[in-house]
Image 1 (tube, rainbow, N blue to C red):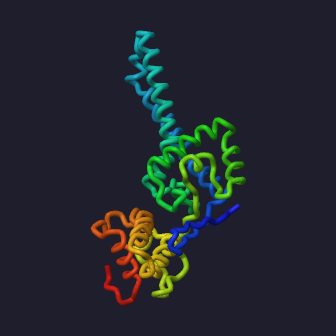
Image 2 (spheres, helix red, strand yellow; image 1 turned 135 degrees about the horizontal axis):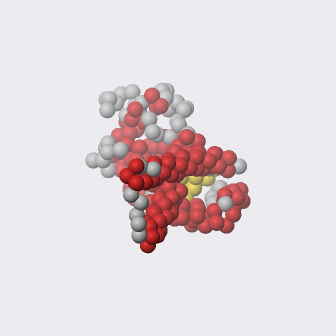
Length: 256
């Protein structure tokens, strides 16, 4: 079941997010698992190819003790590589991909902190290490049951890490200032509807906020938006960045 949750900044500014439902999360994990299985199959094929090389087959080691050591080391490496593929895969993509694994990106969902911040390395590590415990307790059945009864569609890993999985669809409606869709502007190509909502709300209410509240709110929004901009505008502070982005949507603004 899809639900929504709201972040209240305490200064009469609130942002709503649509939580990802069980179906979209299951589809995303299915896609990711197919990719992971493909990586494992590719690794096994490479190992078989190496073992089948003429030089390897022609000169087998004569020392049985050495063979046992090689087998033990190889088995350890295989376990480690599988851990990296099945656990590190999620951590790496969520951390570097702004909460999106390839499966999540295709489905249109992503992981965020429960306060709306982008997910960081620590939170992603915690939620995906707990994934191992969930699988050992009963596979993804436990995760599905917890998601269904959780008010915010969280599994055990989300509770432990303080994360949520939200919908991250492209911004398709027109922007009220220009009447043009931002999906055609390269600057806003990676922006989502939630990004535009937060930017609009901030600019509309900025003058009515206290200096402290204005800076804190700008920091929250900029932390979400900056990963989509790469290294662009790193010389601007959070408030100036949001003002600059807002100005770029107006017809009178010069091209960037």
